[in-house]
Image (cartoon, rainbow, N blue to C red; front, side):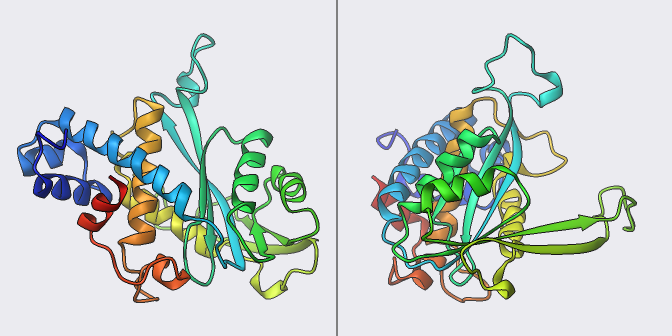
Length: 274
């Protein structure tokens, strides 16, 4: 594909994909066929996943927030048939770990929201850290067992459970409900009570939905294949960690964490993952 599509065009396409443009809108802007855009996105996304897997190791992250975000591939759960392969279609969840201090995403995992997938996610996260971390999660039952299996006693773990009003106090149908209470519970070790939070990682969910078109709410954009979904998510996190300057930090998360010494461009990203 690199012999067919000029590097300037590849940079244009990947930049647009990473910023949340749809494939058909990129086709109209660049006059590149949508199938070519799709193949390029999948190839680059897979290369990004490989690069992140090799790079996100021996990290100094100390305060991590974990969360999982819903999406779907092919069809939503209510439309899934008994004959469908649940590993390929239906609801899919993206587990995300976010460092409170550097805003780096050291690990993510895509699959069903069950104990096995949670165990795999936490096990992967544990291999990427060099410090004893503090971890915060929501009230998902699977986390405590997974964290204990992966970290043992070498972790401080706290859980925060937020309760929202049953009625919608916003102006519109999709406005958020009013927060009634948030209860923090230390579960393993001695976590800093003030740092038990999932606010940053929940904000990251919005960033994902804005930058990954197939995860944007109330659109007709969605993945038809699991590999396309995984590639889009991997591209996003490579772009987020290495290219996108965080507004508060004024550097990329990779720079804040010491992985990179400068802000990358999309051209730099494509060059390094080849």
